[in-house]
Amino acid sequence: MALHEGPTKADERSLSVNPFYGDADPVSGMTEAPPKHRLPDGPTPPSTAYQLVHDELMLDGNSRLNLATFVTTWMEPQAGLLMAECRDKNMIDKDEYPRTAELERRCVAMLADLWNAPDPSAVVGCSTTGSSEACMLAGMALKRRWSKRTTDPAARPNLVMGVNVQVCWEKFCTFWEVEARLVPMEGERFHLDPQAAADLCDENTIGVVGILGSTFDGSYEPIAELCAALDALQERTGLDVPVHVDGASGAMIAPFLDEDLVWDFRLARVASINTSGHKYGLVYPGVGWALWRDKDALPEELVFRVNYLGGDMPTFALNFSRPGAQVVAQYYTFLRLGRSGYRAVQRSTRDVARELADRVEALGDFRLLTRGDQLPVFALTTAPGVESYDVFDVSRRLREHGWLVPAYTFPPNREDLSVLRIVCRNGFSADLAELFLDDLTRLLPELRRQPHPQTRDKGAATGFHH
Ligand SMILES: *Cc1c(COP(=O)(O)O)cnc(C)c1O
Image (tube, rainbow, N blue to C red):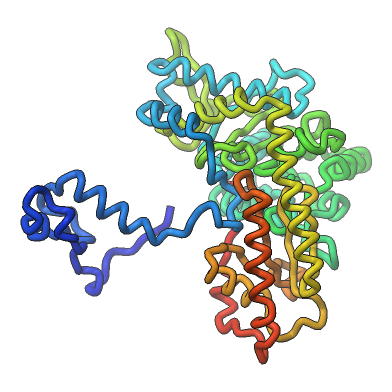
């Protein structure tokens, strides 16, 4: 989490307490103003403490208007109730909470089936805090498999992927000392090129990451073509490079809306897949999933065992303690929606994205890079000839209306391109999309009248991380 520094002198003020927040005597409630950056000397009544924290949180953005995030911002009250009922259960205590453990196991089995594992009973998988942890685990499995087959002690492992990977893969490479070999963007190709990826592989390549879909523009990477390019590489050179599919978003979209797209365990080269239960898996943050095709794909040395019903249960995780509520909520959602329910939810989200993309394009000021027809996400930039404002101006002005739409610059070799990205999620209804479009439409005349783009600090404006 954020690496915070200690408080500065200016931070030494106390919290201010409204006299109403005190107990029976409002004045006594005021005499004890708790310090901000020191543990208070004594207790504060619960009602006062609640109100203070509640009030401070009013200034957070409204998560439903956050079109930057992929993470679920609405669930049914029943899911919230189950989560509240389970907040005291620690996921790691398999022996104490065997039913929670069982629900996790069923979720893994359902995902193995959903992702077309040829032998679902051979699949191994686990829940995680999100896709980032799942990607760390998958990357560690790839690295360990490589180190078991390498004979050169001085060899340095590398991982091949598109430059558009999510930041968790940069973290993986930094934390585990793996060289990141990045396929750049070229022209109108904003994600990995299969042949370019195969060309970067050598005997120290632990694997290739394919993304379904890219956080930059919502496009699916061509996983089947990637596997074919690596098959050809193997035929030519003997190198057998496994693929990990980062399906943080798309692994919960494609199975329902793009059934003919072959991207999953149907491809023999796909060793492992992750998804974020808290993105299009439709669960509040933080839950993710990592699945391996079979035991060979997940080296036994990485597996730790905990007590379970008189025996032991294998586990693979970075954390030890973790709440059980999200896993329970994932099981609830699987049970609640089923295949056709997920299909209906994802279809309506993608319909909203496509319709909104078309209507934004019709305004005439923007050029779409993607159209919301893969992930329900689209990226756009200003149309040629628009010179009075840029995407950073649009992002800033939308914020005045409460809409959070990030603007950012693309990575190599398209640093010249700056885009806006709109992520549609369940809960962003056609009605809300209409209101968004109204606000955007109303802003345009003013933006067009600007003498030039107003963004002063592009560095700060592009600090957005995916
Ligand atoms: C969101 C995302 C991640 C990180 O997932 P978290 O669940 O936020 O940890 C990794 N890869 C891709 C492609 C993503 O979209």
